[in-house]
Amino acid sequence: MPFVLPRLPYAANALEPYISRATIDFHYGKHHQAYVNNLNNLVPSTRFENASLEQIVMEAEGPVFNNGAQVWNHTFYFNGFSPSGRREPSGKLAEMIDRKYGSFGNFKAEFTKSATSIFGSGWAWFVIGKDGEPGILQESNAGNPLRSGNIPLLTFDVWEHAYYLDYQNNRAGYLQNLWNIIDWDAIGERFK
Image 1: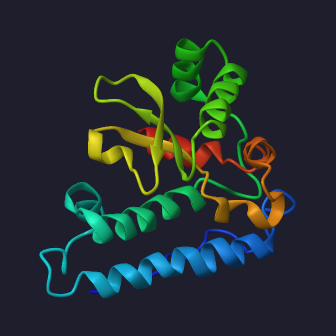
Image 2 (image 1 turned 60 degrees about the horizontal axis):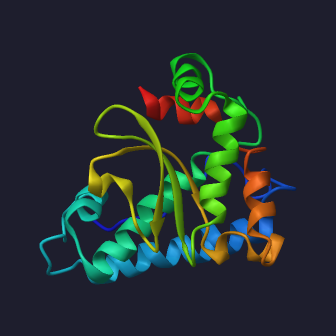
């Protein structure tokens, strides 16, 4: 069964002014779709022909991994946003962040610093590690924390196609503005 581009849980202009409709059309509509198309062209007659996306992320290498992980990563990224919703974590997730980082503000600063400092293209991830402790990871290119046994909760995409139309080369400005559209209710669902 071929992979399909999942529908966004909001309208293409719903994240404005932080992410423009033009960026959604380009990033989601063209880049994300291209990864889906590439993956569908790569998996026939391989052991991944009927595999789940998670199996591909965990086991594949080379172009199959790169495209499969980018489909997974982008789907995860886009589903962490909403035009409305809780803008700060609550409950046990908030307690865990406060315990590890001292405050939500400290966590945001550390996560943003990590994302800003990724050299080249990649992803910043907030995860629960194998030890049950929260952590911030940097992954280059199509890297995905599932491969090292982590449970991802939040990611920021720092490939230039994620922000160049709206922010040009101002990665820091893009990252700072993402905090205005993160949906901590959706992130909290991943924490269960």
